Length: 436
Image (tube, rainbow, N blue to C red; front, top):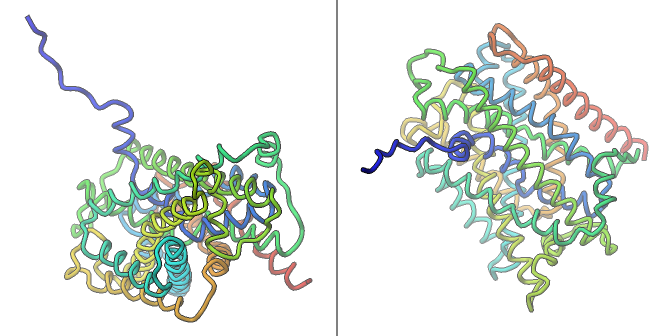
């Protein structure tokens, strides 16, 4: 006599895969080409000296992104819509303008980096490659459903795994790595704080604030916790918010492990061999040569892996950048918005995505060096994030807006510490520049 089989309950791993979503996408998008370039320059210029920022930034970026996700989940609105409904237009429009400008510059830098990286293995002119990537990314964002699009974004995150593998292969001074990771090292000079501000800006980036809040709303619509047109608040629970926190913590951990790996790899391979500056994508690709050192043409293999990684995260990050800018502007002007909407239902929303991407593309036609542009973009984001974090701390701690789901005391402390750290770094950077 055979026993009747009970339907299998989802195991823990299956449940975990269902939980991860906006947090993982946000974490992966955080390691965009600008992040790769900034972290690579950090390891190349300062060796292991800035590894401590990985540990320092993890709780800060997690607190910021969790607050943004919670704002979206609790209110059923994106960040700009919440600011629009609760604060003066004098606050709303400067904030939105700041995000749109920062994102557009970032889009241009990332497209340029993708083209330069791909030119290492594909014999096409730089500008032709920028056009090809722009067409691909706009097509992905305009013509795929949100459900399919989100699935693609999750898998594109795997392109970053080359760095952890290379870090394990190439690192040979683990006592120094561990010491530099847990003991802060600070140099009071412009170059150090310029890179530090860039690290802060590419890790805790303005575009991620607006993106994650809006994507939590998209997830609620997809899961039927929120009706896009009813005007009723979303149906959430403490279990739902715990899942949101797990998703965010995992996404940020993924991001920081990649950051750690890039710094270790470039410090071990480049800085340790006398290279202290990255000028081109080919220079950055040399950090991956230990991964393929047993192959006859290790240089070409390293360039190929580097190119695939940069293009993979670029395809992930640029639509996030454009979407984030569009969410901010569309919510401010009360346009129909969201990747869950069809183009004919949200023309303004998709129009902003197209325009922001094309303006970003055009920045590559004025002869800006892609690698320098990436690091400059990160520094600009580090300065632009300061007032936005102040606003996030105020909104997420406002009981009138968040109700019982307002910040905990730990969340509040971490948000204000983030504000102080990023503001302090920017101030010292400008002061040290003026004193040169």
